Length: 217
Image (tube, rainbow, N blue to C red; front, side, top):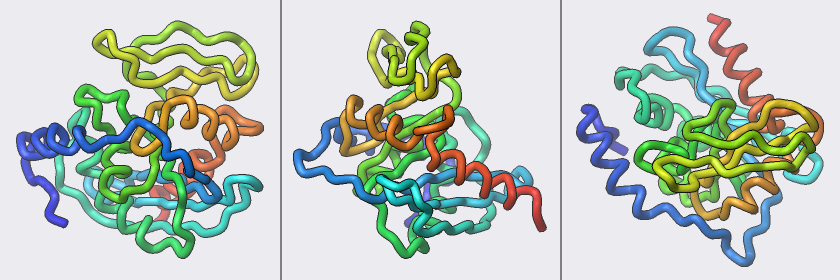
């Protein structure tokens, strides 16, 4: 597809596509395979896109792909998708197992225009998607100490996600809906993907591969 070349065009596309985001789960949504997606930067314009597909129950890696590309879209907060989406879509296209859920290392509805990377990936592919971020975009109250505790993530007096404690006493992660999934289900899936560590296994493995790709060559 033809990607926007200017900031104004990119913002206009986000404003248009955000109306297509679905924030509910289909009654028959079954998640057997989950893909973690992440981007690493070797230089300002050389990027590596990673897609790792897991069995959702066993967390066994079923396939993983690393794709390298270049980008010339400027580094602007709120528009990271236009730097990262093209290489991520190439990586997603090359995995041999079609995922039932996409987990992006970034934001979904927790975004100034309610259309972060996870939303863009979901709307573009039609696959249910979640944003799991390491840092909050918005304000929140600290959730309880125990695994599974959560609190609302709020922007402009609107709930856009949750701060979710994935392990007892560790810093929460920040979950927001991307597309075709509700927030309760999104948090439940993130907990299922994070049985031992703060970050879900999708993010941990994808992050490892992007760092490897960024440090080689």
